Image 1 (cartoon, rainbow, N blue to C red):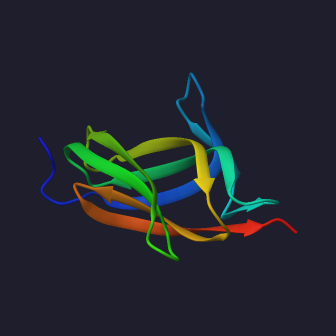
Image 2: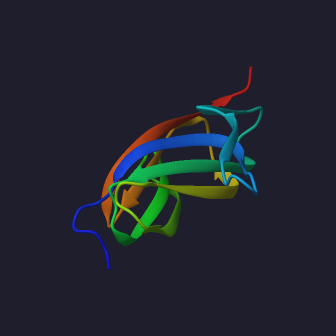
Length: 131
């Protein structure tokens, strides 16, 4: 069963990694950031995470995280996922762990989150040459 309307995006945060505590199941975001830096291009960033929090969903909701270059519209990656909402008033959390993302050159990139094919939110990631 899927919901009639897409869920509400509460947060989309970029970070180096995440850690979930065993007993409490609390999630810790480590090293939040808004941009990446490299001395040379093309560059491959070894790993980072995208944390997404949503509410107002019902049932199993297909979703997708994708990144495109804002300069030319080229898709860098697209990752499918699924969120299972147990309670529409609760908050569902999803972590996308990204590995070996290659940036051909410095610039601005858009990271977009979609649910049920509908864009729920987007944020910019600036990739720049290190000073």
